[in-house]
Each structure stands twice: as structure tokens, then as C-alpha cells.
Image (cartoon, rainbow over all chains, first blue to last red; front, side):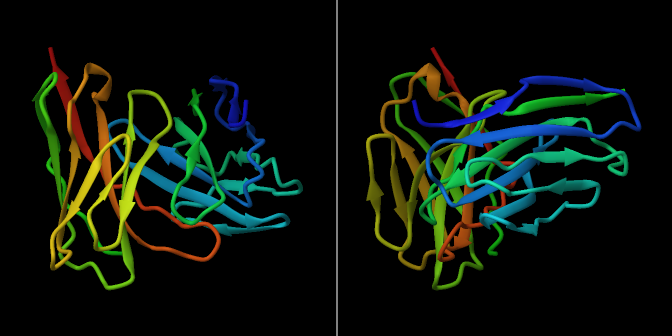
Length: 111
Length: 112
């Protein structure tokens, strides 16, 4: 089945640790995105990549880093510099300019 | 990007049409209207998009006013599974990949 996978579904970390969230797609999409969602809020764009080895900051990139070494993979690292990392993280990809396909999300809890 | 305004919540009876409004009074000529929905604790799902003509697909219909300052998403026969947050987004389409700005959307609750 084609789609986007994010793992794990739930992730727990201690404050001060970096953590990397996985996002893989087998849809052959060029563009990939990372969003953050806080309770009761809409999605906010963290980073996006339109092509391999290139990515751009979104609206809330501080405290996050990404890489795009392969077309199908776009991992997100939440660094210790991110002041409020506990959130629901969503990865998406798109081929056309209209429709983004979203993964199931990773719920990160930092204590 | 043009700002959108949606009611925070709406209710609908199962089997009836759900009409979700969106105001985008500052929309410019090259901006499209997109609708996505998000069922609780899942990733958002694309529903439909349009520029100025009304659009229909297997999920919904999109009605855009002639001045393009508002639109309505219509779910013709709402089911319990349509309970979700519905997001109206206005965005210029870029050539490869399109940044989407999600507001807080409308929580639609379909009641039995």
C-alpha cells in the first residue's frame, strides 16, 4: 500500500534530550512537510522540502532540524533548544500543488 | 496568504446536509480555496479545492461566491464518521509543493 508512515505513534523523552521523528513515504512525492499541532489548535509548519538535499524553514523552525538525503525520507529532530516540545507532530507529502497527504502523526511527550 | 474566518463549531443531524461557511474577504485573484478535515488524533485529509467555479467530488461540494470573498463546503448527507475539524485554507499554488496555513477550523459534530 502507498502512503506515509510515521513512527513511533507515541514517544516519551526526558527534557534536555534530542529526539528524531521518522517520516517515510512511498508515494514518489517530491515535496515533504513537517507540522506541529498543539491541543485545540490548527497545524503550524515547521520545515518543508521541495526536493532532495534542499529544505526551507517554516513558521516555527526554531529548535528543530531536518534532513532530506533521500526522496522518501524526511526525519525531524526536536532539539533540546525547543522550549515546548510536547506536541502532536504530523508529516505530509505532495506531488501536485493541491493535495497534501498526511501521515498518522507522532505524539511526543517531554517531561 | 489571505486570512480565513470559520465558526468554531457546528452541529448537524445524521443524514442531513452539513453546510460549513468560510469567509476570506482579502483573497486575491490567484489564490485557491482548499478544504481539509481532521478526525480526532489523525492526520488531516484533503477534501476539495477551487478557484472560482463551484466544484464537486465524491466527498463534498464547494460553493464559492461570485466575488470570491466567501465559500461553503457542503457534505450532502452527513454521517457520524464526518464528525471532524474542517479547515478552510486559502493559498497561492506554487509550482512544486504548496505551503498550507491551517487556522483553528470548525468542529463539526454529526448527531444521530
